Amino acid sequence: MAVVVEKVSGAKPSAPGQFGLINLLKAIAAQLIVLHHLAFYGPMADYARPLMPDVIDWLDSFARIAVQVFLVIGGFLVAKSLFPKGQPGLINPLGTVWRRYAKLVPPFMVAILFAVAASALANRWMTHDSISAPPDFMQLAAHALLLQGVLGYDSLSAGAWYVAIDFQLYAVVALLVWLCGRFSGSRLRRWLMPAVFVIGISMSLLYFNRDPDWDEWAPYFFGSYGLGIMAWLASDPARRPRAVALLVAMIVLPTLIALALDFRLRIAVALVVACVLFLFGRARTGSYSYWGISAVNRLAQISYSVFLIHFPVCLVMNAAFTRFVPPEPHYQALGMLVAWGASLMAGAAFYRCVELPLGRAMQSVTEVASSRTAFI
Image (tube, rainbow, N blue to C red; front, top):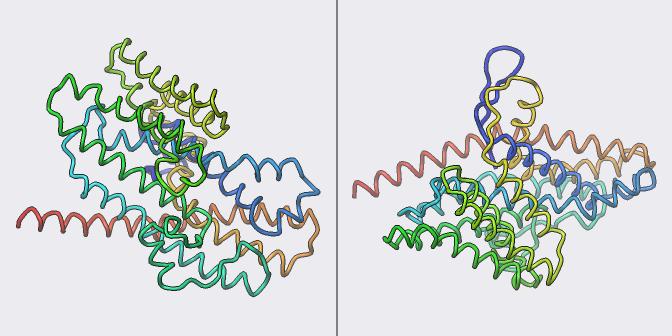
């Protein structure tokens, strides 16, 4: 989820040429996820509900659909990363998947340790279902392998399931790209990969996504993720209009059929996001220097860190306001705002002190291991 933002001398940072719409969508979706968890978990929202019942009910019920934004954007960006020219390449699937794991898991496990500590602290101040019991070694190991949901362990943080699903989806796409790249015929390769992804999207939307028993596995979410991939392919400015029209039809028709058979708001949102990315996803912000662009880019840059660290921050804030602040709606609503702001500040600190250093360290380890393997 990270997007690099440059800083220059002076009061206003400058946004480099990057995908501005994606940054905006990521920034908004990350805030909605934080607010959803504030409304869904913890006593503050219950106390504040009489003050703003409609707002809290909406955040509780609908803000979680912002996850679809991340899924579609995730597919769009994985396509940009693995096949930027729209054609499968001869990638090393194991090395590619390992690099994804090395990027996701180290900061994720640090955030899990923060969540364990937050639960221990919150347990002293309140009793609530959102507080996790102290984990054993096997539960921590399952999280480190991103298998906690598959193995039936309770998640230690609200966002743990998404990190596991993101890794599964990336691994599936890397495998499909590798398999498609094994075919040497240029004419076949041009449409083989879109056809494979459309089949995967159709299977997901028509079967897997309609069965909640699959919600710990990639096929349940592949429909939304695949729509992002197809949006990248269709938005290629080098494609001829007929090819673009065919790719757009491959995005829209299977999704509309799936929605006609079983309407799901989350899939409708995913389709809208995919269409928006098709139209504007590759648009760049340019070198604008005004405050709004830099703020959006910064929020997008730290979105993964905010996603990882906000739950322990909100848990401790809920416990503190339960223990030390009167249970009056205005005070508790203020507590929700404080928790939201604290989550953003913690996310910025986590990005600078954890995500960035660990990312650089893991990149160095991977490069050294690759060079040794190549030498051998």
